[in-house]
Amino acid sequence: MPRTEFDPPIPLTACWLHWIAISTGDQAGVMEVMGLTRPSPISFAAAAEFIDTDAHGGRTPEGLSRVYVSPELDGWTLVIGR
Image (cartoon, rainbow, N blue to C red; front, side):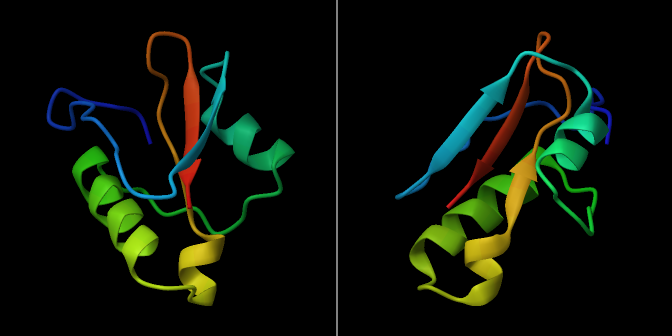
C-alpha cells in the first residue's frame, strides 16, 4: 500500500515491539521473502493501534502472527510486530 499525504507516518510504539528495517522500497518483495500471506492494506494510525493492542492483548494466535509491513519510508521498509 503506497503511502499518501492522507496517511502520514507516525511513531509506532508498544510493549514488546519487535521490528526489522530493510533497505528497500519493495514492500511486496519483502512480504514474499518473509513468507507473509493474506496482506490487508492498513493506515499507519490503524497499524499503531493494532500493534499496541497485540502487545497488551495476551498471547492470542492472531496477535502473535500479525505484522505490519510499512510502505517505503526514505528508501526503507519496516516490518513491525509483537
